[in-house]
Length: 358
Image 1 (cartoon, rainbow, N blue to C red):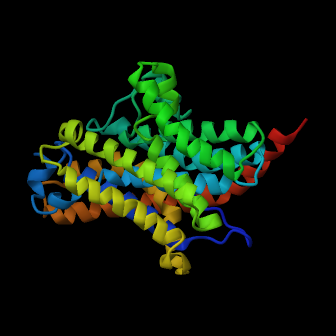
Image 2 (image 1 turned 30 degrees about the horizontal axis):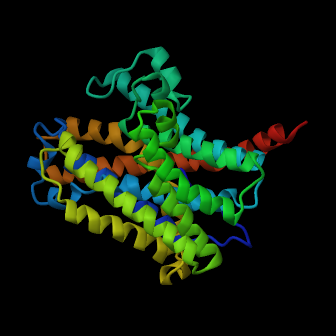
């Protein structure tokens, strides 16, 4: 998930290239939403407005899958060697401040713009919990559905921590058994279990976890076999999505061979940025790029669509596209600068102290 910020300490160096990869994933999702999905904010389908770019951006939805792989890597890194209170405090303080800001800003926008998602006041309040999906309540931003998926992954890691902490053996067992059990739950119509185990997304998180173990411990046959299993399961999930669901969101064909290649590239890119040659990059701007990713993901939907609907037809579509992206990046920077930076660390400390209190 976009909120999976990379931890940093003298013993845990920051992987700047992985921050940059997170921004690539966010921009891919943004481009998909602005230039490919079947929305009427342009006055017609986005794919018709941008026929050439949409040949490529139609695959931008895979940025979400890339987020999940990176999240599997980063969350296992965050949890390794840490107790449950520290993990919970870290995740809550990272997820919620920017999210609350995005919800409030979006509700204010929708108060005077009828083109966005309209929610009742009580529904907006439930949105602040990040658990609106559990009550089948509309999210104020379409991209928020992924946060509910992330919370379920955090729950599984939290259970592992509560049962005695993260070890190599436990991490491998979870990463290899979880996706298989999740698929069995779906196949046997065990709805509650399937909902908790998120079968459509489990292999992405699990694959990211195994990539972290490769980063931490080097080449390992068992980890490699588990990674291969999860990559295969990810390809299966991605091709099913391409065939059955992608056309629901756009009227353009999705090539399953292209999707297969992109899934392989996705895992290769995370490996290159964490254990390969790109892991040594130390460009400081990549750290800022990673910091902006989560708030950008949170706000790009409705605010970008507002700019598009307001300006479409008054100037070049490509200029409107640039302005929509610029507004989203500006809002992301403002949330990072004035919400995340001042709030995160004090909130984390207070939550940790409260959770550790007898």
